[in-house]
Length: 459
Image 1: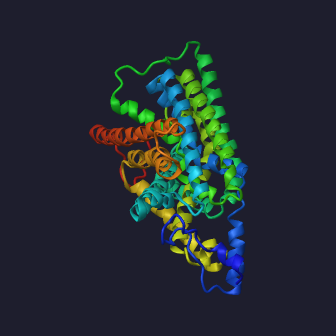
Image 2: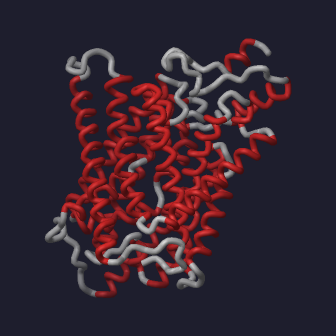
Image 3: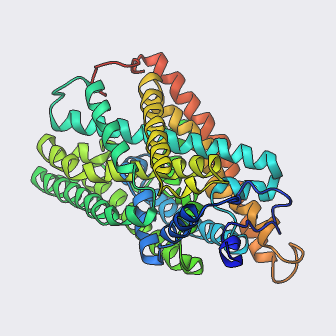
């Protein structure tokens, strides 16, 4: 084996101490394995910035965008617009910091590896747990969303458990392609799907408002007698809509020219800001305080069925990529010293499909077994997304990116900015967790908590 090929498997130890756990080293490799490793390495380095943008859109923009009008209804048009634009710009900045870390430490393959850089072995394991739990919960969330869509389209035509199993199978099949470059092909369908669903909902609600002949009861200001819990759930819904940084390390690891990531995050960030702000503002303006979440339910029985049907691709494509990312992390960690990690041998494919299947089944069981799963997802998002999107990037800047003292002339502005980002993360962490727990307690008090493994339709 020549020196050039050996170096392909040598991890950069300069910044990770003596550990080889991030990338690993293939040893005692046969000629066949050598060929498979070379092909595998090339296969997972095909992502350009345009495809990265598409993959980020797939991961970031799902039916959550159709929950924005309800946040606007709670916060009012003014606060809703300010938060939608402001948090979007902050998310672009924190993703830029994440990208800088990847460029400076190219051996970082997933977010957990960056956790090691700031907190050592403990940080690696802590962020690993956060990463795996959050992405698995998101797969479960999309499984439930698919169930709701099928129930709506068929007028509760079958037991919700049946539609849950169907949704899980679709998510499993779509998660099988291991390369994000392959996922990018589905991304175009995903983007057309969500844009069409949003467009139909906006047009339908606008026409219905025109036919009603009276303006809606929208307001520029927050709803009267708004509680802390209501306000914070609305705010965190907007925060979570911009949570694309969690998968950024994983996606950038497949780029053939990683420095081009800046184009991708600006493209994605601006697209998200426009989509979220216009969707939230226009549908809230047309429907008023009675807007539902997802807001396509406000478009009327027939139109909501059409919109849900058109939105099926985005429900499952966006959901499946979370399963792919978490499986890539686990598979790469288990087989870090083996050619199996390239998923182009029989063993590679068998272990990969088995892992995707286990993750999907676990996600489905968690989503169906926990009666307050939606609130559990909100808690996990408050605990984890607050870190992935806000306080971790702020810490990255202070510990990994900053050069010189924080109060020096060239660093003071960024120090203040990252300090504010860290504080926002802490506020979301504490306030979002509290609001979600209160919401669970209210659900039990009001008797609205759904049973486990039930055929009953969703409320």
